[in-house]
Length: 225
Ligand code: C5P
Image 1 (spheres, rainbow, N blue to C red):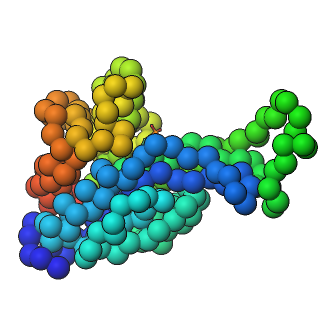
Image 2 (cartoon, rainbow, N blue to C red):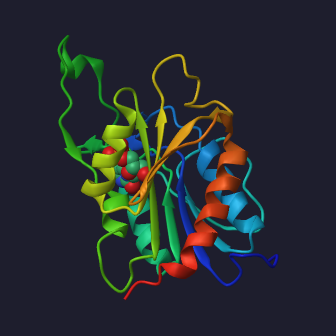
Image 3 (tube, helix red, strand yellow):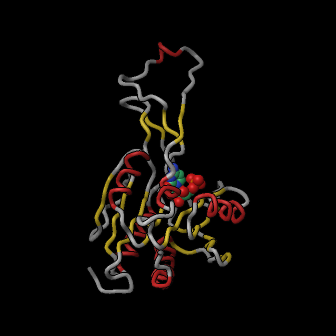
């Protein structure tokens, strides 16, 4: 552990997509690479924090010096996150699948069984960020979420901040053509209780370092009751 402004602090980070099984060979997933979440974990570690990184399936190398918990589904991610609490700060950067199959087939689904029109019955996954942000003794002092939006980026992020009970929301425009989803660079708006900051385009590593520096500065003034 290196000394730094987050020495002695526990920072919990979610990263990557989740995989929601349909049957033993198929799953629902999304295009999240985990680059942003893993960059946040490295940035927190570089500032001296003890980092727990709960990651969905990614192809990135394991970051050294952090406690890495690998999961597949949203439910496993929630369980791992709740197990890792308490934390001083939580950053939810994972692109958690909103839905999972209502039932996971025990055997591979067969084309012959479905005919031409097959429908999937989905049910909602737990919202990990909203669960972490519920007020109580286990709530981290600073809870940060991400909002990947394709329109009305800042307004949607403000609404998301309130709806989920997060302290800060990092909002970015992932519409087709921005190259943010899966790319190395990002352009974000930081939505806090005090207002909106428009940050310039920068690498996901630089954004992570800047966000963690900001968070380290804010944390001492945020001790919750
Ligand atoms: O609602 P939406 O998915 O746009 O919210 C994004 C934020 O909420 C991200 O911080 C994401 O990590 C978090 N989230 C979560 N659990 C979910 C869905 C989203 O933690 N089931």
